[in-house]
Amino acid sequence: MWFDKWSVEGPLYEFISRRDLYDARLEDTLTVDKMILNGEWSWPDGWLDIFPRLANIEVPNIHFGKEDKVRWLTKTYQKVDFSTSQAWSDLRDEWPSVEWSKVIWFKQFNPRNAFILWLAVHDRLLTQDKMAIWKENADFKCVFCSVTADNHEHLFFQCAYVKSVWRELQRYMFQMQGGDRMQSVISNLARFKDSKNIGVIVNKLMVAAAVYFIWQERNARVFKNQIRNKEVLCQNIMDSVRCKMMTIKVRNTRNVQRIAELWNLNWKECRLQAK
Image (cartoon, rainbow, N blue to C red; front, side):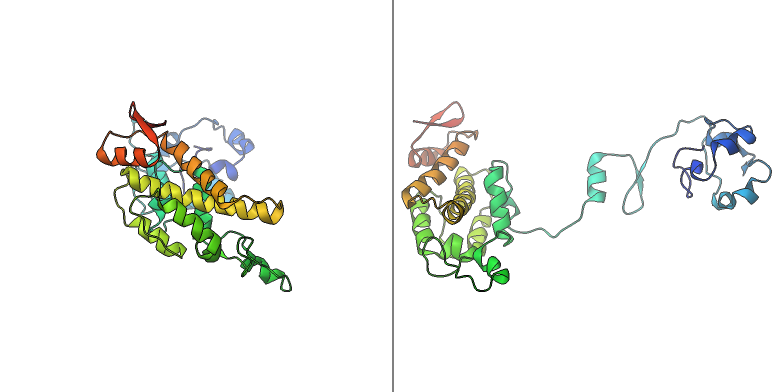
């Protein structure tokens, strides 16, 4: 009666103290039904004057002989049995679906690579064009080509150095068309609806790994003065994707065999393994 959130006024203990209960000779453990007599509240004498908020509380429809049951009030004000899925649906913010969601977040994704790709898609990485806003007189140049300040499109797709990296990687991708903008590359990947196709999975892994390692290489050159050539960068990207491919369960299909041959992998026990 006193401590549960059953009324519109909230728990009654917030304004009725234990001393008030003691003076009225009421127990702490009293249940709601014990305060109802003939369909009316049986408040102690003077309580409605001392606690005017009690007048706002309607007598609940109590089914005597039945146990209380916790119910969930949905955002459409329907009372349903509680479930975590219903709670998540009611509490989360609803955003419109985007074409790139399954390009970045899919069953076989690499969390580290996917997170950087997600930031890149949102144009949230701290590229030089953003730093130029608060450092106006700085002479920013792309660390790969030294032509212009880097931004997301230039750094990942339009720089001559990066273009040569993509040309090398495309040899190991599945029917993947090139692109010089983030949106076009993501759109090309989103065209493939079959997420179980090993070729589509490889394409997604390759794009995420390429963006991650290009960003890593850029930061190594800017902050550590460490430079790796194109061959080493491509090999790091390939090794990352290759390791992930060897954790994926696949079926022995013609497409899988073609991918295995392209990547110099063996088919064994439902997995691709290094030769």
